[in-house]
Length: 91
Image (cartoon, rainbow, N blue to C red):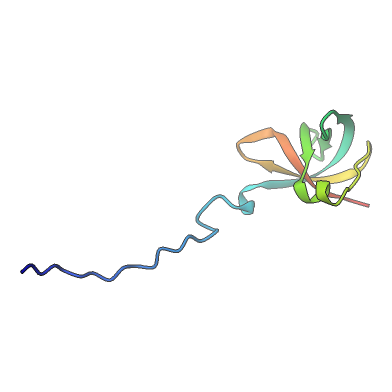
């Protein structure tokens, strides 16, 4: 007969803050310069950089229209600062 040591198991929950979350993205204001095919846009940011951005899923689902000259909020990932996602259109 063998006896083993029984150790308490720690709670192994995955918390959102442990993985890459929204906080890692950079949000900036910009102006739409040009409309490109496949719901892509050329956006000039406040700092003067020009990025290519697509519409976020919620904006696409709610049929939010974006036109040239609109003020938008663009979310950039730190991995590629030349591409972004439009998350809000200002009025």
